[in-house]
Every structure is written in structure tokens, then in C-alpha cells.
Image (cartoon, one colour):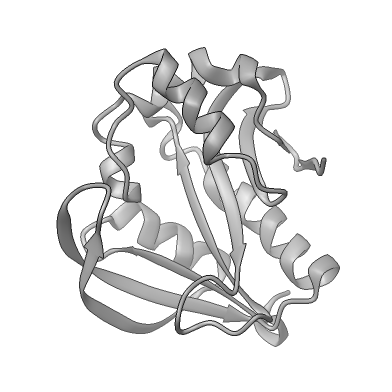
Length: 177
């Protein structure tokens, strides 16, 4: 399985032993709902999500280099999954534990995944969507070079049983530096 390293982070596949740290952070109601999923309600639920959802080759547990056994977030790259994307385009998604907000970890992780998407996989474009009220995610997009494309109105969020408006941005391979 693939691992990516940055100055401060190791992005690695999830392991069943990650359930306690995943639950510790994914149970925070400020995390999941802003990323489109409900807060985890038990360590067992986190273990099941690791086994059923967090298994793809381009789904990474975010860990600090000095403590790679503790998951502090997640970042993934989905290729060609949304209606507006071709098979040569991807969409990046991410979250990080509240105690790590404002440290620049998600821009650092995002740059590593963008590099993988453009330089290794050869994607033409990578998209990123966020609720129009998720200012932290919108700042990440701006910091790493995504450009606003449009606002999607009334996007269904089935895991949360709600609709929201989403800011949709994109970075093209030729814009990637």
C-alpha cells in the first residue's frame, strides 16, 4: 500500500489498530458534519468504518512523523466519481483533528496528494468541494492554489439528512507548481 511523506507528516493506509485514535477525533461534532458525515458514536463504529469505507488505495490516515500510530485526520483522492468529472480528474477531501487546526497540516498533506495525483497518476484536474460556510476548508483550497469554479446549490448530504450549498474549486495540472 502507498505511503506519502512530507516534512511533518506520514500519510499511510488505515489499519484496524487505528480505531481508538480515529474515534477520539472523529467523534468530535465539529469534524464530521463539516466534512459530510455524522460524528462517530463508538470505537466499534470507527473500526467498522476503517474496514468498509477507509480502504481505498488513495485514502490516507494522516499521522505526525513522530507518532505514526496515532491518526489525526484523513485525506483522500477519488478519481472520476462525480458527475462533473472525467476519468482523468479527481476530487480531494480531508479533515484533521480540532487540536491540529491552524497548523498548516492539511495544506501540507493536500500538496503531497496533489503531487501524487498530477505527477504520478497523471490527472488533468483535481477538484475540491466544501460547504460554503466551512471557512477553514475554503482557506486550505486557496492556500494550495485551487481556483473557485462555481457554487453548487442544495447538494444532498445523505449521511447527515440535509442539503447544503457547496463551493467547488479546481486546480489544473498546468496550474500545479
